[in-house]
Length: 463
Image (cartoon, rainbow, N blue to C red):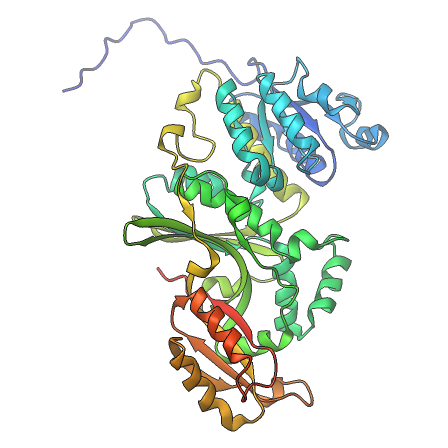
């Protein structure tokens, strides 16, 4: 049995207080939405944060394009510069907060900081999706941490959940609504019957969408995030380049209404799912608008909110919900990362939480990202026909093409634009994407069909 240590009769030494331990010194590149929010929350909650971190966290230098604007935000006690490299390599900086965004120059600043022995905190999902493998390898080489909770779903601590809270689990899938702009647009299309362009204009007017919303509406932002989540879930490198990405720009209000008729709602989902076929194991890594049952928890995530669900073999299905954007919401995640860094003193690199949740020797460098054709889901088809009587012909023809038809219905006439052809709605059972693609292509030439066929995936996301 274990033995108790011999107790000394001398009074124990008191642990040093946070007030006498040197603060963690932070250099920040960028003082826009994320940077300004981080400064405000650090200043407002400094005593609470120091109590949790065991030491203070002090912003000592900021790089900004406009030094006058930066001074209005941080005051006169923080050094200012317009040279990012000066911050990245500053001798009085322990950790770099990269809050400027982008993938080119930001990569150079981050790598320079790492080579100078500095930890890095960033909310830049594009940087890590594109250059993350290189950055994490450099950080391991130099014994520093790269923390990025704010890069995925902002206020939701989903990276920490995967790397720490669910560490005992074999993760089966991760899926969720991880872009607030597109969720706002889809909510407006469903709730108010708006078209895509009108809903996008509202999102831009309210500040939910950028003047150039391409990364959001084309699914690229969500693909950055799901690539990082997949790496943490499955112990694989970041594989953004292999993700299948489809946005919502071609989504029609008619399909939003038809989904409702069938008992579903359309959401832009990021999905990472482990799949085994025989001796081959791979991962589905994809972003697409998909139908979700109206009774599902994700169907009730509206507006600009985000939610992520994870299925583990031990924990079962867990769900994480919160704001997916915002200045102080992002700051919450950035400062949580700074607190983690502040606690690292005296901890060897090999004992820290790994950057992607798995130590390097346990990473699977060769895990395959499955091609689009191999993805298995249920599907929704909307088939315009010349006559409502041709509904049976469509269902029978699809079944003959090895498409497992589960339900066939006609769209409600009140949902159709004036002068529209009847629309046959089909729900399938789970089937390979390749089978559906071939059937849709051939169906376009069927004499009963009066226009382009719309196909969307259906995600059940069951426990």
